[in-house]
Amino acid sequence: MQPEQYNLSGAMLKLTPLGSAKNVSEGDRKLELLLDLGAMLAREVELDQLLRVVGERVAAALNSDRATLWLVDSKDGSLRSRVANLPELDELSIPAGQGIVGHVATTGKSVNIPDARNDARWAPEIDRSTGYQTISLLCTPVRQLEGKLLGVIQVLNKREGHFDQRDLVFLDALADQIARALAYTTLRSSAGTQGVPLRGPFNHIVGSSDAMNKVYERILKTARTDATVLLHGETGTGKGLFARAIHVNSPRSQGPLVHVDCTNLPASLVESELFGHERGAYTGADSRVIGKVEQANGGTLFLDEIGELPLALQSKLLRFLQDRSYERVGGRETLIADLRLVAATNCNLQDMVDKGEFRSDLYYRLRVIDIALPALRDRSRDDLRALAEHFLTKYCQRYKRELHFSEESLELLCGHTWPGNVRELEHCVERAVVLAGAPILSGADMALEQLNSGISQSTTTPDTPSDTMEFRLPADCSLDQATALFAQRAVDAHDGNRSAAARTLQISRNRLSRLLAPK
Ligand SMILES: Nc1ncnc2c1ncn2[C@@H]1O[C@H](COP(=O)(O)OP(=O)(O)OP(=O)(O)O)[C@@H](O)[C@H]1O
Ligand SMILES: [Mg+2]
Image 1: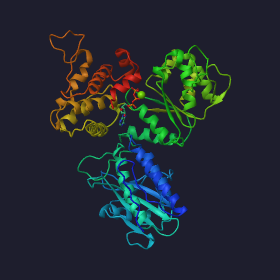
Image 2: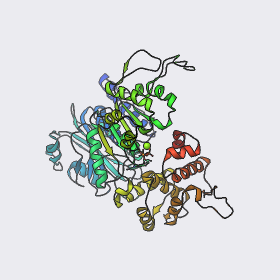
Image 3: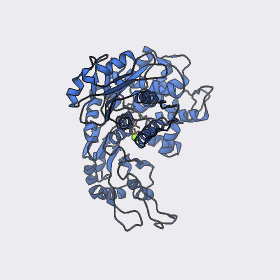
Image 4: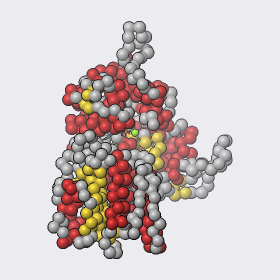
């Protein structure tokens, strides 16, 4: 029989018709899976989402019991897996070269084993720890185009009969697709090393200091529940990032994550923005509009900068938090939304409560689980270095440059105080990537004195009035990049506070965020 052919550039593929009804549905499942992965290629991918798709859909597409993606940890070459369908288990780990998965990683060759227990390479420890019994097994390496090994995909226990050649062809094709999808996660590896940098339990979050490990632990415990969470920390400590991590790791991850930035809401529109309005609710309301609360039904509502929520709205939000019920503005019907609420703030809400600016009853409702995110100065030097390297890889990829830190530049970054925290560090590295002249970044490339002096005093010349500024742009800079750098200067001048920078620039905070990250 002619094997199926897969053309996996992007999401395109060609499946030859398969004949029997049973096979057609298996073909459909395969097609669906490839399209899922294809869709992931269009955007930044959450590692957990990728693991879930691989775990559930690959198993179904190959009519088997379970599929696992093992990733090679670039630190020590061991293979690691978070088993998406067994969330109660911690990450599994296999030392390099051990077991069939280790064998495939070492030899780079696929294997198809009808009875694993009779195979000399089989290491039964994993089955022992999971209580699962492996019989048949299909296993193939996941490689980048240049051949570098990223991981191994393993499929267990064919439901009927054995895995055959067609299954293997499919799994090989799929492994290419997974390698592409991995390049869209933050698990991009640095040149020369095998594997991917596995940083911690969350794909986009870098840092393994004690302070960060405590946060991870709390976030993971909380994510599984429906409890309301209040994230607080200075500007740029990753509140937005952790809100997303809570959603992605929660049972609601398939539902929407709806972000509401309370600083962007004029007091007169907040209620309708949150709860929606009926047609004719006020002049200009010519149709019914669904609010953010309704949009978040089944998922997570993220109320960012909750300290900015006008007092009048605080009582409405409190009522909603008590019984999840609300009315659209101008509507009579009482509606219920089933959602988990995550709120974030860089204000001291307790102080605001003391001053009568924030309702105490709302504060207590919000802080069921209270998670404080550490400032950069409370993290280890290793965290700083890891973050700097992470952003260097990210921006080298975005601006298509190949650069490395000199030891001097890293030392300077680690010794600097970062009032704007991770965001400020990130933009410092981005700016260096855009402006650097040589492949090794020097201390001067980090331009830390400029950062300290802020926007109004930066690089002014004797001819420049003190309320104007000059700054350098690369000669081949696009208008979007120039605008992004300009906007970033304004943010730096406000110690990383985007709301204040947006006010100075007389634009909304959302618009500022878009300017800072040009496509
Ligand atoms: N631990 C981290 N690992 C990787 N990137 C991080 C980390 N923490 C923050 N960042 C990055 O720093 C930037 C700021 O993070 P984020 O927007 O989540 O901060 P924030 O606390 O919400 O700040 P603000 O209070 O100003 O809104 C983002 O680009 C984010 O991706
Ligand atoms: Mg934020």
